[in-house]
Structure formats: structure tokens, C-alpha cells
Length: 449
View 1 (cartoon, one colour):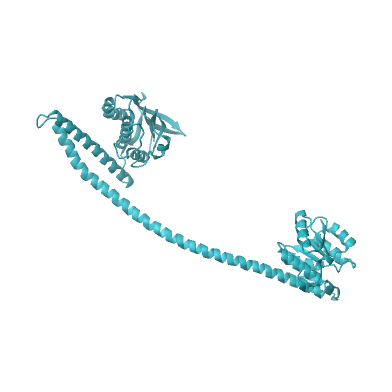
View 2: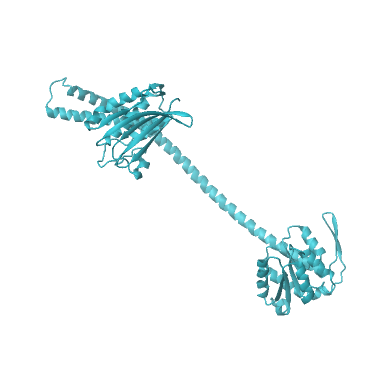
């Protein structure tokens, strides 16, 4: 205890009235730590019996309890002339001003607000014990006051009223201090939020500027690719044309070496022209400049014509090109050129990455969630695709080592281009692959657009 209290805690006994065993034990340990003697009662009725038997120096009571609450206990104590001088402190949330009035009406000497600071509770106990003698000398009969247009007459001494006012004021000061601390926290948080908002605004501005730069760079890239592709295709077509004329021996006979070299030139020129065409097609798709020309397409005819185009390449590798087509004609509305380009790319890849066995082209229709789908499948008996490489398969400029032999041909645009064309046609391109045994690529299109 503070020396100004001029009391010896060991000379005082305090009764705790609390129905919660956990809270009661907490209070008992706290008060005993200051050398007070302590008793505990679980409700008002038990407390009243202990008070009459032992007459404690102070009662610290919760309000909400079974059988007899804190207000009723306080009234019983103050109504008994033998007990009325015992100070009663009520522990309350003080959520309503009427709580104070009711406490005063029942004769409470002080309030402790929940949640309470331990040091504050101990100081109030010490204060009440010091003022116990002063209260015994108080002869004021009572006062009248109004609260919410309702009159209350309180039988209380001056010292009791003063103690209650001081207690209430201290509680108000404590609450105000807590509110000010929280207000400072809110202000600090607002300042941090304002700072972060300013940073985000700066970052968003930078992102917007970068997006504009990227859009402009993309536009310039697409324009450059388109222009360069057109510029390169013209001389390449000339090279292919003149080389073909020479191989046909129109100007005159060729030696074996000359024919071999011209064949290599024509093959390289055709390959380069194919790469340029792919790049130009990708540029058009990314720029949104591809226009579809929908028409009625007989699927079996389109697949047979496409297979005939690449059959020689399959035969040269010793591969069988198997067509698995239904007998009934399958007709869909689609863009013939885009559809042909997808099938050619898929067939060309299947032949390129298959060293032995067969490449199978299949056509089928099925119902999925009430929609008729037409599916074109190309299956090879090649090496398949490793699981770790499958996620990169449809990326632009991505080439995979799908077989034991590295195929360096192509710019890695074929499947990327096919996927984009499939999307433009309203369908999707997907695959399954069993590494070491082959892959199947399937183009699934709605029968009607």
C-alpha cells in the first residue's frame, strides 16, 4: 500500500463476491498479493451469510450473479444497521448512467469499471478503507436528483456521494484517456494509409505509363513484323520460283552437284517462307486484324486434301498415314483457311517428331452439355512430351526436345498459332501425351457458330 493511506493491509479482511471461479481466483490472488486477508463467496446469499458471521472490512462484488445479484446484496447490507457501515464496491461495465443511479440507490460506496486495471482496483480498495471512518461520521439524510425526467431520492452521506463522484470522475478520465490513445492510433493509421495511398497512386501512375509504352512498343513491333514479312516474302518467292525453273532444267541441263545444291536452296527458301508466314499470322492475330470468312466446310474432304499435301513427307520417313473418318459426311460452318492451317501444323508436327510407326488422323462428333462438337484428332507414335514440358507447349517461340533427336526447325510458333486460331474459331485445342509412347492433339469446334 501507498504510505499516504496509513493502514496495515494485514489488519483488513475483504470479501470477494464473484460467481465465476476464474475471476474469483484472479481477484483473490491479486488482493492477497498486498497482504489483505480474503474470503470468497460465489453469490449474494452466501456472501450475506459470511458478512453476518465474519463482518469483513470491505465487500467487492460483481453485479450479475445467480440467486442474489450485486445490487440486491448491497441493499441487504445497507438495510442492516449492524452492517451498513461496511463499504461496498460494485464491479460493473457502467454501460448506462442508470447503472450509477441504481448503485447509489442501493447504497454502493464505489464502482470499478470492467475491464479494470489491477493497480487501479487496489488503489480504490485502499481509498475506501481509509475513508471508512469518515463515512461513519457523515449525517446527511439524502439528496434528490432527476435523470431522464425521472426523479430519484438517494439516501447517502456526503462522504459516500463524494467517493462515488470521485470514482465516476476517475473512471471517466480513464475512459477518456483510452479514447484519446485510440484516437491517436486511428490518426497514426490514417497517416500511414494516406502515405500508402500516395505510394500506390505513384506506382499506379508508373504502371499506366509502362502500359502505354508497352502498347506502343507492341504496335511498333507488329507493324515492323508485318512490313518486314511482306518485304522478305517477295524475294523469297522469287528465289523459290527461279530455283524451281532451274530444277526443271528449262535453261539447260544440270550436273548432279548443281541439282543437289539447288534442291537445298529451294528447301531452305520454302522453310524460311513458312517461318515468315507464321510470324506474319501471329502478328495479325495479336493485332486483332484477322477476319474470318465462314463457309460450309465438308470435313472429310478437307482432311483428305490436307493429308495428301503431307503424305510424301510421311512416306519419306517410312511412316504410315492412317485416316479414320466416318462414312456419313460431316459439314460445319468454319473458316476453311484457318482450319486447314491448324490441321497442317498438327500433322506436320506429328510427322516431324515421329521416327517410326504411324500418324493417325481422326474425325468424330459428340454431344457435350447439349452442344454438338466436331473434333479433329492427330495421333502420333512418337516419343511424347515430358510432363515438365507440357505447360510450355503453347507458348510462343518455345521449342521442346520431345524426342531423343533435337529438331531445330521452326520458330516455335506453330502450336501457339494453332491455339489462337482455334480460339478465333470458337473452339479449343488440347492434347494428351504418354511420354515414350506418343501424343494426341485434338481440335474441338462447335458444329455451328
